[in-house]
Length: 128
Image (cartoon, rainbow, N blue to C red; front, side):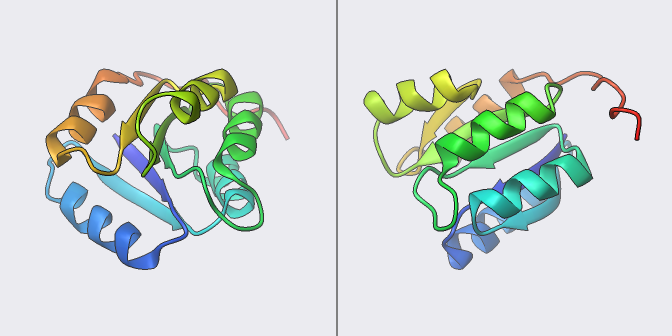
């Protein structure tokens, strides 16, 4: 599965990229530090999954998720934030995220959410 990591904390992104790269079925295709860049990179790279933080500069994860789901319906978004389940998780799902993982959860929880997405085949990109 091809994954785009989106979080404004560089150390967290880099650490998560390293940890996920050890998984044989996961390829990190890019990293973004804000929602606006995440939308642009998603439309360009068409990853299977976007791991999306909520609180970021320029554009937050809720708005970026809405835009990604509208522009790239074959891409799945998983919310990833320090906020526990509840209102933020519900808001991410309302924006189009297929799952939500708390940053305090174990890596196995995140891996299970990623693998549960089963992105399968994406539709071809829109004609230019």
